[in-house]
Image (cartoon, rainbow, N blue to C red; front, side):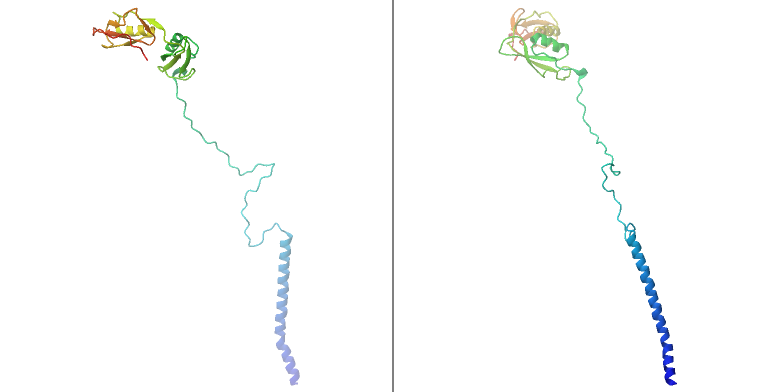
Length: 225
């Protein structure tokens, strides 16, 4: 009887251990089934991100040839500042004088309120060969234009200036291509002149005139360079 009791008692003591083994096996089976189902679901849906992973920041992909990129920034034209050209009064330009007689060219410049400087050459003729500034150049009123003439300075007759106002005498000399020189000042009435009236001079020569009762000039015509 002791043997029977001992075996039965041993069996009774072993029953809780077996229950624990059975329970542990059952739980392991359930966990394996759950893991297997999860893995199968993930593999079956590749578009679903894995748990715990951080999706990469979406950026603009390359645009297809048929559509323009939507992230392009509008181009803003950079403003340019160009200083305005220097204004000339009324669009004044040097007239076309090349080929004209130099006296005609002088009159053209006078009409446009421009100055002139005649430079005579060593050739022949009276025609203008060149101007500085060149023709059609924009200039301001009062600009002096250099007029180059093909031939030498022609002869002119000195006018009679005695008794005239000094300013009027200067204008009369200019009309015939001569320049005044004032040894005693340029105010008052002309009392003397050198060379005398009707003498021969050349274009650009100077005539000495005494104005306002000053001393009489003694020098003759002074050629203008």
